[in-house]
Length: 109
Image (cartoon, rainbow, N blue to C red; front, side):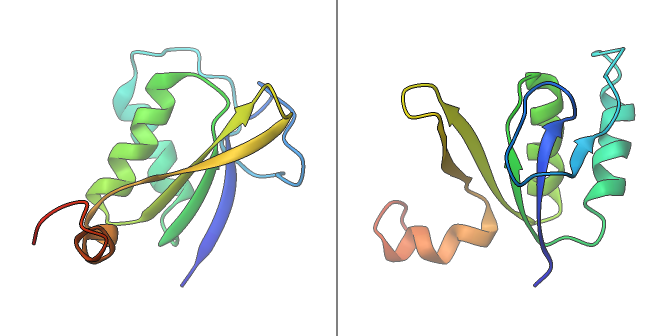
């Protein structure tokens, strides 16, 4: 399994222990959804399990979620908790999680 961790957009927030970002450059055209998807595809081409530290810009985040869902890549998002100063994880469910969700009784088989 090839697992990697990324911050979403470089320069938006300081993320301890994260030095790789999906978007290394500022996104100048938030309507360029195809262009964003190409960037995501390049960064995640050899990954099947990814942690993404969310740094804002929802259109960029949706591009990551869409790509991972389409390519059955296990995706866990990490969000900043202002109260604790730490990060908390939120898995994004897809077919990768289906058996676990059925086993836990969250969805039916």
